[in-house]
Length: 133
Image (cartoon, rainbow, N blue to C red; front, top):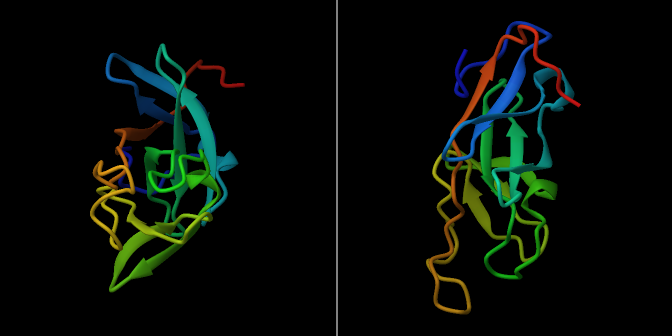
């Protein structure tokens, strides 16, 4: 199973690639459809917003809102804009594409940096003998 397909096994595990290895972050069944959760990955403990669309697809984006600086993207609302799946930031209501992290409302944050969110590789795998807390 990959991050772009619905998981069929109830014991499947969601993993995020931290750039060096795949980190198990939660069980697929614990990700509510249409909802997000924040997880920590990598040696620096980067905050990642993890989402499961109603169709089953899982996405992982940076959890930091580039406009407010708050780590709140995981609390955003899922939806679509012109058929493109998006998450709406709960702070200033900017829309970000779930697949690419691109901000659909503004190209740059107030400090002049690109407003796009980092996208993390994510996959859903069978839960072999792995224990996820």
